[in-house]
Image (cartoon, rainbow over all chains, first blue to last red; front, side, top):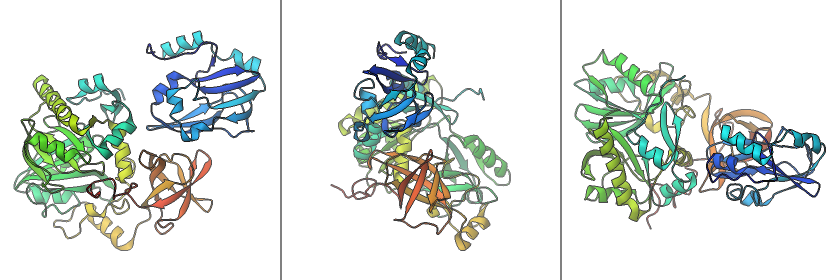
Length: 132
Length: 382
């Protein structure tokens, strides 16, 4: 992990490098700074459909970089209630602002408490990426 | 495989300036800054690539022409001294062992430049057949550094390095020249679609002296090129520029089961040649009687990025497969090359690409994918 890799406190993290933020009963999902940095030039983001039900750990999107395509896995289960449509025209926001402008979708969670237990805290995620 | 990866003379420079990754048995830079910026430097200014990982074989002697005509598909006899051409080397079934550039650097002396991944295979093939001819074959890969200088400002930069105007040197020729004070061949060729050249920096062994010389030469290109907006470019931009130009890449559009006729590179294949090369009868049959698959270009209409092995769909049926695909920095759309049976689609037809279960529309096109009046070697001069 380089010194300028940001791991934001207060978020929950998956081993696949997604983050989840609890926001008024909803869960906002994106990919981490570590993930965007290893993908480099992000050219396209495929998001789940609003209204669709997604399951924690399942593929629910796709990120295309110049060199590769990578799946996005949802860290939580529930119903997608909003997606970040700005990423259609500005996928680079995921590179530039992975925790803010680069958010991907919001979920109304169906099994949050149990699933949060299997995610990492910021401190645990820092240790995890240091171990990679 | 735990084989040690090879490194070019410029490895330490790449390591300290860019992201180095394993590629075809080599540790090579994939990017120095941002693949899109490097790509655009090639399209709008000038980019330089270390291509020393490719193999270079010297073929010389009385039978050099007959020997090379036995192994390669373009017309070797027609190649004048200091001329060069693109060619292929086939197996007995007409499948492609490799594609290559062949340069005639003397009456009976040639340099064969081949893909990094195929170097050992082609060297074995050359040695096996050389025994029947009066030729000398040498692997010069470790003694010649190869650097591509590509883009609309490439000839201005190369002229500055040469101290003379090189822009009149015809395309595809291979010219002995002094560049930045060093003995080189300047080949008027490339793999980006843009004008420019590929430099063979001669007498540069892979040892401390040669490495120092190579780094000095590379840095001279970057220093002299600053006024032209030069950027060092990695393999990422090498792949994205060649794809946008519609050039085939071995292992994707070409392999041992694909003929150059199927790949639609007919300019690499000649039939009025003597002796007939290995695979001649098969490719002549492909040319006369037709092929079972043919290469097409695709530009995405829907959003999404096509990638190798994605199915090409027509009327709900899989008709073919993508062999190379990615996002075009110029078009800002997904583009692809792929194979379908002949006569299933025409240019302008709409097909679908199965992107991980999602069917997305794409138009069948010709290549290059960019507007050739604005980009590429034949662009209208400003």
